[in-house]
Length: 125
Image (cartoon, rainbow, N blue to C red; front, side, top):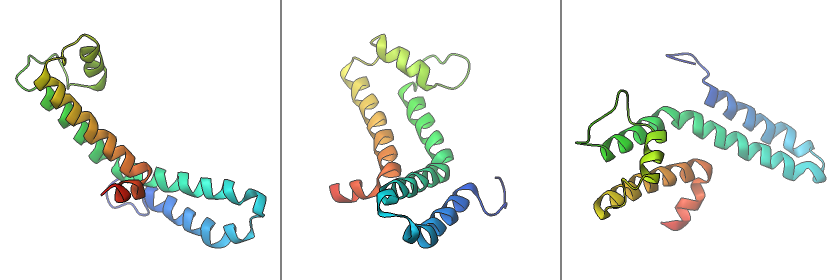
């Protein structure tokens, strides 16, 4: 949904998850409770990913773009396929380039972990 459309996809997932947790979970037999909790967790992750999708795409594109700063740029924006090919070709083997690559990939991995399991990162602080 775009613009001022409400509810958004993330909001719809949150409403559905709350309804499932409040109204359905208490009625679920014990042998299906774990399955229901896994569905709730998946819904929460999907909601966070929907909310974060645009920001994450821009952040990763900016990080990849920064790795190529000053380098001749082929047509189009730098992308993950080009980055993967350049890593395989050894273009990031030099220490300074390897450090920059590591920082960019680590930041992306941390962002993904925060989406999948925010409490994990809270425990690491």
